[in-house]
Length: 86
Image (cartoon, rainbow, N blue to C red; front, side):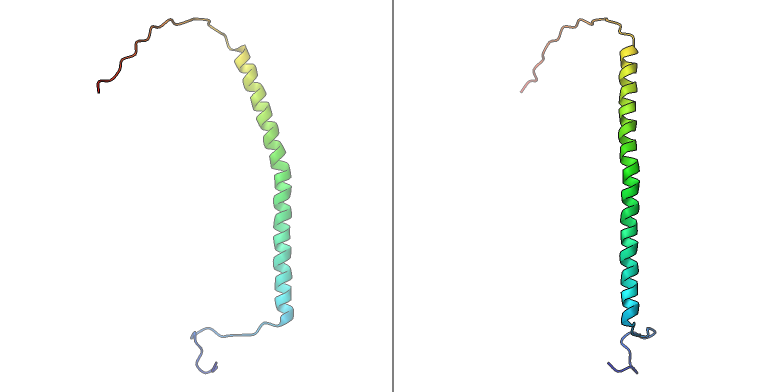
């Protein structure tokens, strides 16, 4: 490639030293591992909290339903089946 006629005008091509590329790779891997550990920590807190909250809400709902007054009224209805004309 002729440096006098670059394929993309306005963009200069530079070489990155090998140690800098390795440093960028190490930084990217460590950032990825940090995010995975952070997500696992949040999951370890949120999942049990959601399970406990669901159990408490279920217990409270059952208690309210048991305390609700039961009227005991029975509605007696006669049904008649009407078939459609074909």
